[in-house]
Length: 197
Image 1 (tube, one colour):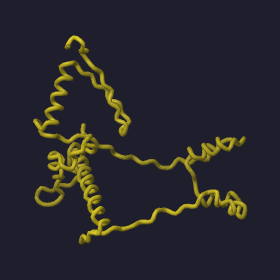
Image 2: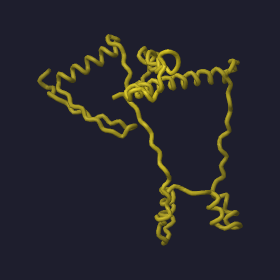
Image 3: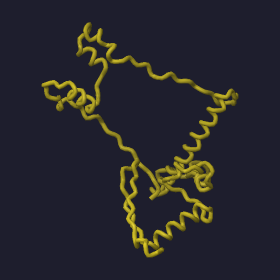
Image 4: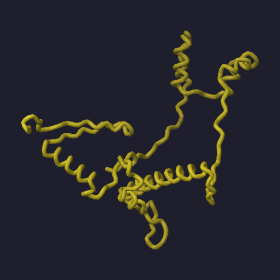
């Protein structure tokens, strides 16, 4: 049977959330070792470790490794130190562990919400209903366009994204050129993405 197996594999892992492609190459022996390690891990022969897939694991709220990771960087008491003095690797771990706490808090909120909706009276916990936004379909503004003029109505509604404006421009089949010089570049934001190395 072994004669029919190939000697190596190339695997392309697509990380859609990070927009990355990771290429892994395995020899047959490496593939066997990976499978044995994964099986030992799944069967409990090896302690679990935290990784970037924990958030989608069915055992994420019972996992020993994640529960142990809840011990965050001390910010008070004798062992306290400012975050600014932490090494970057420790800050990364802090953020990853804080993410675990946030997941547990979200799960706890769901449980409390369910209990409140079932009629439980829990001291210090209440439901706050928030009304959704009220909207008026754009076609209902036609009388205003006739009364005030299109420029006044459009200026009241504010700016639109360049993509939406281009779509409207193309759909209108107007002969006028798209006013690209009037497009304003708004300030962007930078977000730090953190994951296990």
